[in-house]
Length: 279
Image 1: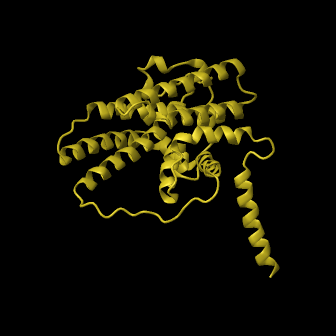
Image 2: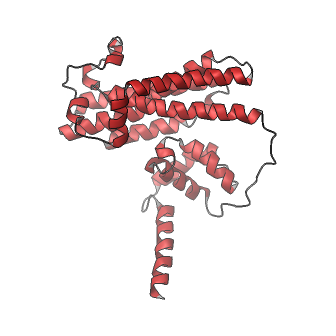
Image 3: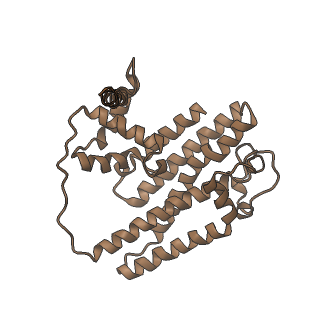
């Protein structure tokens, strides 16, 4: 699955450039949907041409890998629909609108409570039924969507798992929008400005950002590298959002140790622990 992981990384990099594509939110979302489709098409071609070495690999792909991309497609489509139908009325009206969208998500999650539990608890006892392609049963929610039924790239519940993941992201999006509306009614407080400064190379900062994103250490990995750069950059008064991919290229081109700064951090911590133990 190393190639699929590369596809996911490429997608994350492409999605982090959304705001550079246009200042118009619908255009940003159209771009995101397009990039997700490209990534899914690349994955499909890989699956059709190479297949899987064993059943375990097939289950892992349709349970974990494909939903990681497909859920983003579903998410950005849903956000596009919400933003397209959103009317700039008063705060109370917008809050009611977003609450209606949240209610729709909760209704879906309630209807699929058993699958949601299976997903959240990490169960495996039905994996061979849910995530193997040779299964003639079709999930109720997509029986009318024949365009989704690609026998070479479809299992019973990779769509359901993708919907669950998309809904989780969508709920976070709606909560943030509601928080923005709440902030409109609050007097702006004096902005806090961090006194901390990043005092080593910027490429080292980029190395940390990619490690955080890929490891799932922040928001369970449901965050782009650019979002991390903006958030952590605020703390350290550092802006590398425009140069993220240049720094990533530098990291990839290293000949000896790719994760040089992470290795330096590891050695520094180990040295301190060893010094304390020797006292």
